[in-house]
Length: 125
Image 1 (cartoon, rainbow, N blue to C red):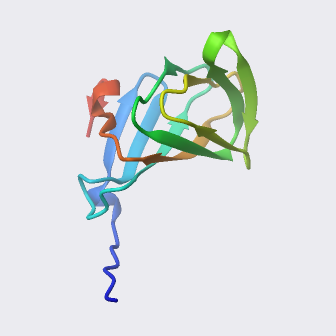
Image 2: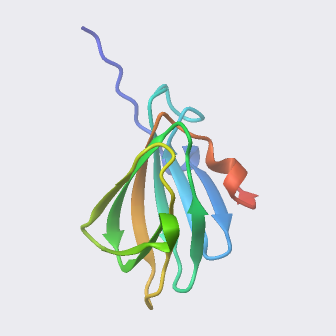
């Protein structure tokens, strides 16, 4: 079976931003042959919030790389997350984040099936 390896450079990434949040889509259908996943690197500044939301037809996995903060879950529930932790959100599961620390929170997000996240951000480059 023949496989096709892809290598993507930084000039091929899409960067989306809201105040205090920079989300770089490293791999998605816009820059890859992959039709199954979006891989995103997000940096959330101290004090910034990603409001509670859902993805109705995609599950999402967050891998915390640096920093710490608080996940915002359904019914006003919260849960701490810190570098090294992994969180999985099923289709339709409420989730968000607040960086209530004094350093950037950095995480990788794996979303399947893929989503074009442009709708959720004010700026795209």
